[in-house]
Image (cartoon, rainbow, N blue to C red):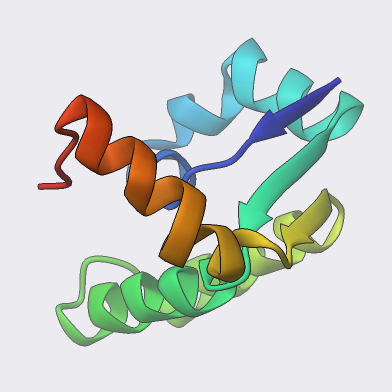
Length: 101
């Protein structure tokens, strides 16, 4: 099974309580599937982790444990995201009046 792993979901697992990662959904998704991400996903994750550490919301040890967990996940970056964003995605956003907040 493949699924799109949005950064906001991954960061919820990271910043949430330990019970978020012990729930069946994240563990099942992460062990049995390929997570599809945009090419900028690693930068987004790093940014949130660095900011959380600076704000002392998490320790560096917790960040490292989370990153180690991610290393065990089959994460596939969609290299075509950028080229589609400037054409197909923009066209769909205009057509259906989609906006990001």
